[in-house]
Image (cartoon, rainbow, N blue to C red; front, side, top):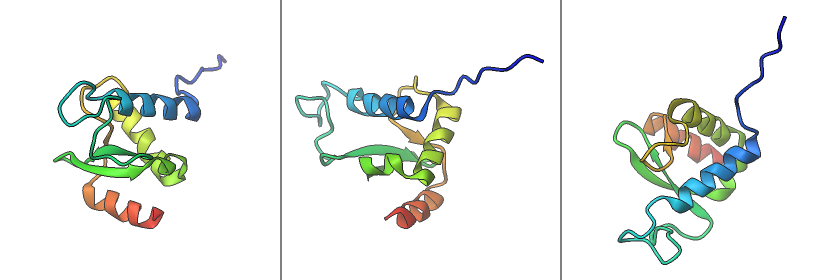
Length: 105
């Protein structure tokens, strides 16, 4: 019986990829500062897109360590991977996302 190696990345590496993706998305476009970060996103936060309409939400970076938010990130990785043109997209109904975020707060 052969042992199957998982192709899942360690959690720390997944978080690093998310942060790299968030900071590199949209560089040199209108609405972004000289560091390539969106002007409307406060320091210590990042944008995610949720639901069928891809509604934009600004969430604190501290949520990356929260178990329920990590579950959403894993679902995003499984569905979209990290090589797509939209920002970080959460495959979740917007109402469910809002309920979850209210519990995290």
